[in-house]
Image (tube, rainbow, N blue to C red; front, side):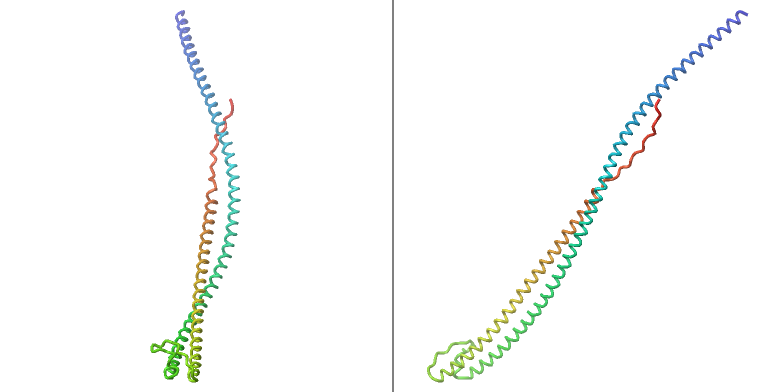
Amino acid sequence: MVESSIWSVTLQERENRRLQEASMRLEQENDDLAHELVTSKIALRNDLDQAEDKADVLNKELLLTKQKLVETEEEKRKQEEETAQLKEVFRKQLEKAESEIKKTTAIIAEYKQICSQLSTRLEKQQAASKDELEVVKGKVMACKHCSEIFSKEGALKLPAVSTDNKGIETDDEKDALKKQLREMELELAQTKLQLVEAKCKIQELEHQRGALMNEIQAAKNSWFSKTLNSIKTATGTQPPQQPQPPLPPKEGST
């Protein structure tokens, strides 16, 4: 009976020690878990603070970006207005230049027609003068007294002065023929001068037309360059919008 009681007490002591050891082990595990939980909460709080700081920075950058976008859109609007004004000015200048070119072209065509008419007239006058001169030469050569004013080659020459009455009459005829020849030569010279002046005027007008075409091309190039630069400036100054990263959920404090 006594031995049975002793054995029972021994079993209880062993069970108590086992339970105590288990309790101590559980308490140690509980302490470890509590320490790990506190450490995790501290790390999460630090991460949350960093995320909030980063969110504040991103919000400030977003505000600056929005402000920059508004300024860029305003600048783009001004550039579009300026481009529209430049287009209108260029259109008016182009219309004016085209009108000037049309007028110049019409004047050139008119002067070319005048030159053609003058050339035809000159040719006719030369032919008529030649025929008339041949007739006059024929009449002069048929006259004994008048044949002295032309050489055998047909060139005009001055005869010797005669003192008798027949010589005076011959001189009068010679003077009349000389006067007629001078008038014909003067008319031919005037016609040639008009022809040369008309050709010079045509060259001057063609030069003016070429200058107008160069001005139009230069204006086109200038307008195209300004428009292209405006488009590049308007599209190149818009900053890309950065997406805002999601924030981690906040943990409750211990």
